[in-house]
Structures are given as structure tokens and as C-alpha cells.
Amino acid sequence: DVGATDRLETSLTVVSGGTTIYQATAAALLAAGTEASVAIRLGRGRNAQAVGGVIAPATTDTGAALPSGLTQAAMSQNLAGTLAYCAARWRRQVVYPAAVSDAALQALAA
Image (cartoon, rainbow, N blue to C red; front, side):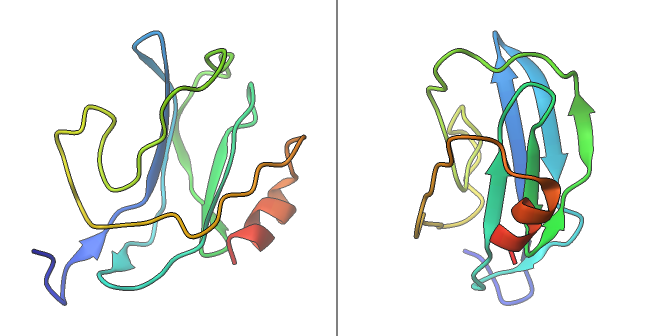
């Protein structure tokens, strides 16, 4: 159960060959039960996550190439499925043919 005072962390982790090549966690925690806009950009040396219009600082960024053909995306849990933090849902997913700028990423998540 998520209580009214609980806060939720939003992070993006990209793993290739069992090695984390990128990880970023939003500085601000989200209040339980609130909606948030999240935008991510994936690309060699161009990975980023924005939450509520703010780009999350990367704690790991090796600049390595992404796995060919991304195979998993998880929301509310880690990819192993062993930690469930909240009940979340995708409302809309848009895929752009090229990486957007930092400013555009922030606008998408505002």
C-alpha cells in the first residue's frame, strides 16, 4: 500500500549485456497518486530522462551503444520484476525518428 505521505522515485536505467550503461534518477520525488509527465531519449551518448520538465542528472553514463533492438521497458518495477513500487500506467507513448534536443525533451515532460 502506498500511503498519502509516500513519495515515488522516477529513474531510467539502460542495461546492455548485463552492464548498466546509463542511469538517471529524477531529483524530485513524486507524491503518491499524482500524475507525472516523463520523457526519455535513448541513443549512444544521448540518453536522458526528463520528469515534470526537468532533466534528471545521470549517475552512470558510459556513452556505450544501446543494445540492438531494445527488448524490455518496465514501469513501476525493476526489470527483474522483484521490486514493485507503485501501480502505474502508460497513457501515451510517442516514438520520434531522431533524438530531440534537451529543450524539446524538457518541453515534452512539462
